[in-house]
Length: 184
Image (cartoon, rainbow, N blue to C red; front, side, top):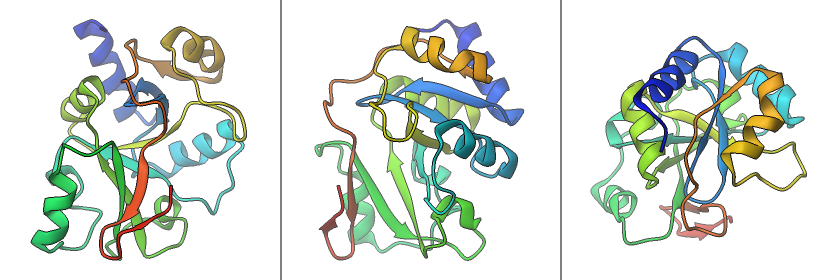
């Protein structure tokens, strides 16, 4: 587990518009402040990711996603809050004010109430949802280890917080809670 100092540094880097890496349920994630367009651009370049592709946001609770999603019916909220499921990213209707670089130009945004203890704590400490994309270059295998993530991305300006990934062997499933269609 990272020290309190390391967690504070993570939050400081995140709030200053820097790129960060952190453990999630299955892999290390790369992220940034979702409302920092410069950081999003640097994340696209770092990964070699297509600009038209949206991002997933992880959050500690529903309050952190309210600025990004339209009001949701209770039936959808109960699905999102069901912690007995495997890690799930939900495609939810995006507010009109959400930047297109987060949605990939779609009218939905991908949100996950993160179940990984440290990732959840980092969202709480930062007081915001965090962009979450796998720690890899596009087309490469995602990293599952803090040391390898630090070695791969430190020279590229990414701050990596220590910690271990969760026990999930695959990335989160992606589901539209209105149609129950599974995309991953």
